Image 1 (tube, rainbow, N blue to C red):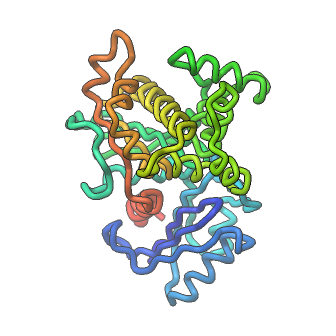
Image 2 (cartoon, rainbow, N blue to C red; image 1 turned 90 degrees about the horizontal axis):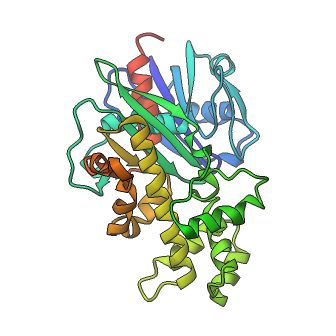
Length: 332
């Protein structure tokens, strides 16, 4: 009756096996694999179970891509999967696919004090809605609602909503990007791993001097985002252009997190997930972040009562998939 769970990403895939009734923090076995090294999730999962000597009867996978009618294609991978196909190939009674942000949202109720970092000293409202904003490679969003016996998580594609500038310089950024993205600029274009280089290029075009060493590293890098973040946070003197880029990124993230908080009345809190927020904690801890988050005009007073936390546990999506699998093990 073992349960297989996974966090399926374009770069890496983490798998775990649980016994029914166990705690989400105590799997029987875990492993992480480079996703691109395998032609399919099924082959990877079969190998994992064979190596551990454990068979499973059900599975839940969080996947980096939208799930529609039980089917998905993983972003950045040629993997196409369906719940029915996975169940048949792996010999399971049932399999479930979750959007990765939905999986992270499912983890919120089981995160401990060491899994998050508070940006505010505010208590969550009892049973209040909870929002999740997660800038990683893209910008994911999800939310949780209290359903009588506990929280249930819901996916969202709010990261693709129209980018709404909150300052004159952000208006210039929008005008700059409208030329490149055929008349539609989403928040993901400016608030994600893909979006950070767009802000950098805009800042450079506006006349901010580029450091030659940084320029060379960016040109040589497969992903310029870690280079920009690294130089922005250098203790021995940050790169001014990278620093300005990261400041604008944080301001845009704060505004969009505030938008989600207003949309769902997130008295239960806003959680910042994904790969970027834990890496830029020094920037998020500056007063400017919460000032932008709470700056919602006549409702700024309400926003000042919304807790904001950064998810620092990189395995949150796996925990969320495990929580769903353990809750549904009797029904499967």
